[in-house]
Length: 286
Ligand code: C2E
Ligand code: MG
Ligand code: MG
Ligand code: MG
Image 1 (cartoon, protein in one colour):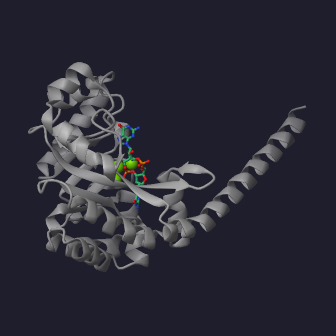
Image 2 (image 1 turned 90 degrees about the horizontal axis):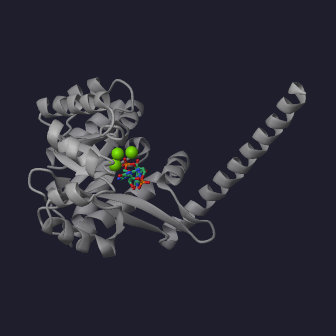
Image 3 (image 1 turned 90 degrees about the vertical axis):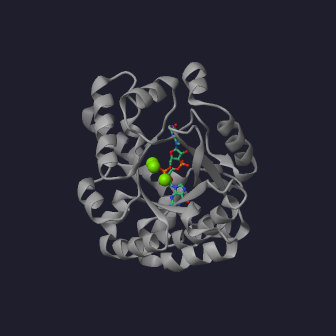
């Protein structure tokens, strides 16, 4: 019986792989169309300064509303775009659209754009940034680039050159999802980051687990010691906010507690609303 079960399971497994394969092939084919037809949009999520209660930045996050399959997560379509090389077109578009939107916000708010490893190889990131700044008229210091450790592992030398050049022009660089990749500490030493975004997996348990709390506090202290602006991602509860404020040197917070990523049409009102309240409100009411 065990043998028979194994075979059935294996068939199901392979059938599932086929479904996944065909689904992914279809999405890859549709993605090109989505880019040209404007089916990609941006959502923006605020980052707030714990010291001032103010929104200091909004992260641009790509959204794809597929005509028949509905909303597709960027965790699905960004890797597909990287495989096909379409990521260069997407990044180019995101940079321009994000810079344009940022011009509608108060002048002390910047915009952050995620860059893929593949962009360093497949595209001219410097040129794409220049285009976005020139066509929007946005000041360079209001644009930030977020890169992950895995992107840096894949394209270390290319990335280093490009990031150095961007920093020279006044553009801030954030190390995204910090703590989830390999040999993180060597990147902190070599690359010109201004911001450290601690991955939300480090935040998840801080309200209930003292070890998680101490780990986060120490990672934040490391960032602080290196003169980086330290961001905690993925704050969902009032209890997590309390721990961050009372036990850590985290500078900025980002998470569903303060606001989910919102379309450009809604983000202006959210910024105003957030700037009008204090963190005491979130601590009390969640
Ligand atoms: P990321 O750059 O780390 O972006 C933050 C992700 O965390 C976003 O997911 C955001 O919605 C989510 N998030 C924010 N606050 C919370 C929270 O309190 N709880 C939870 N559970 N999640 C929270 P999203 O928009 O689905 O994007 C996922 C990833 O896809 C991004 O992670 C980024 O790596 C990638 N991505 C999104 N847009 C782009 C893009 O334009 N270009 C590139 N290269 N990658 C992108
Ligand atoms: Mg990011
Ligand atoms: Mg992140
Ligand atoms: Mg992430």
